[in-house]
Amino acid sequence: MKIISAILVSLFFVIAGCQQASSPVSENPEVIHGSQNKSKAIVLYYSRTGSTRVVAKTIREALDCDLQEIKDLKDRSGIKGFWVGMKDVSDKVTAEIKPQTLDLDAYDLIVICSPVWGMHFTPAITTFMSSMDFKDKRIVLAAVARMNMKAENMEELKKDISSKGGEVIKDFVIKTWFKSPEEIKEQTKQNIKDITELQSK
Ligand SMILES: Cc1cc2nc3c(=O)[nH]c(=O)nc-3n(C[C@H](O)[C@H](O)[C@H](O)COP(=O)(O)O)c2cc1C
Image 1: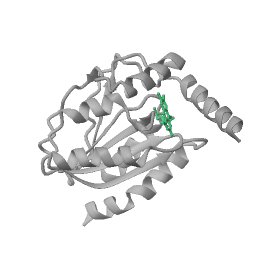
Image 2: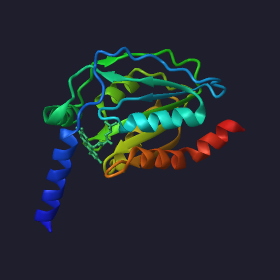
Image 3: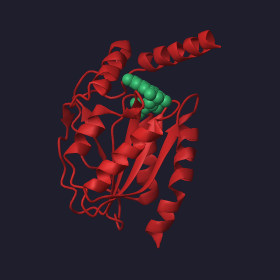
């Protein structure tokens, strides 16, 4: 049993490491505006291989709100990118990101989407979150994982946000292993149903 688990975990790591980082770091990420933005909401995300981008864009479409990608300026591609990513998470490294900060005063709902690395949110997102002013903001946390994120790590993020005056109104994990972009979209829509209903009232 132990051998089978070890093989499965190794396979999981190798496949995750081989996935290509999907967007070049030289791009200049800018806010993409919703057509109405009645809800004063924004979706923030980082994505290495595209799944979290699918999640973020699905939420953005559903809320008709703004969208901002957070870029990690380190080369995260290939197997090397995977191992460096694992190390950066365990060393709690501050990532070099673009944009470093953003004026979020106008928003009352902020959706933060991150891939799960080593059972935590990614360095790009935790670095961005560390400079955020959460006071009086409603926050949604979306973790995007091949399998899962450790519940106690999500709880820690939530505690940190509430200690800074924010309210986490929802958190969820989108599971991507063997899932098509369409299935990821559907999972996302199911998870944010109650938020879209809340926003349309
Ligand atoms: C460095 C690294 C560590 C990862 N650690 C985990 C993990 O702990 N648990 C998990 O379920 N998936 C893990 N994954 C898989 C990613 O969370 C998953 O493939 C996710 O869908 C990637 O999102 P993206 O395509 O937006 O980058 C890891 C991937 C990488 C690159």
